[in-house]
Length: 112
Length: 116
Image (cartoon, rainbow over all chains, first blue to last red; front, top):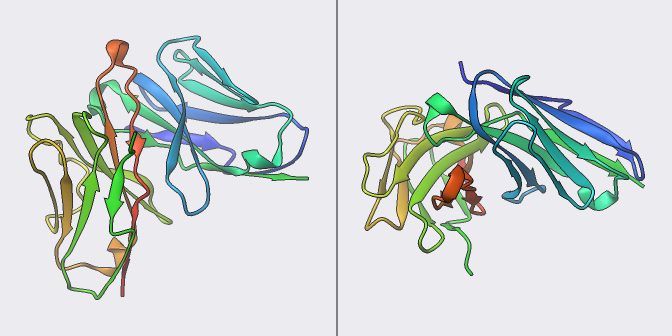
């Protein structure tokens, strides 16, 4: 079964703190994406990760991929309120054609 | 340039009626996808079109759902005899092939469907 699981599903943190969101997937993946969704809005692409050991950074967000562990992480450094959103990881499985299989989403709330 | 657009943005319908949802992909994108997002099921793939190839319909939940893509551009998702469990946000995405397979799916704003 093609499954993507995120952890945690809800995260409330203070500004200035660091935290990590985890994304596990069930079988060999072609590529992995991170998206951001603000309330009532659509999905905004953040990162695409293609290979083992890939690391990408944009501002206070850094994503990494370990294909052997079937794990991706999204690390937030010195969080600011503007990063409050729901974050989804999504995987294209080798046997799943081109469709994205999404995790459940992590609702991140950053408090002043 | 313009992103993916969808219409209508909101649709309220009565149970049993048919609805049509429209998607205009980014110009030049050959691939088009439909997903739906609901509280109970999260984000689910529905259907995928790539160029002139036969669509991948593996995510359509029942035969009440169908989609077409005319002229390789605009797509319409049709739901016949709507049920309350069809209430969700229907998202369209498009992408183009990039070297190394790094294509990204760009999402539209969605159509929020409410079936009463």
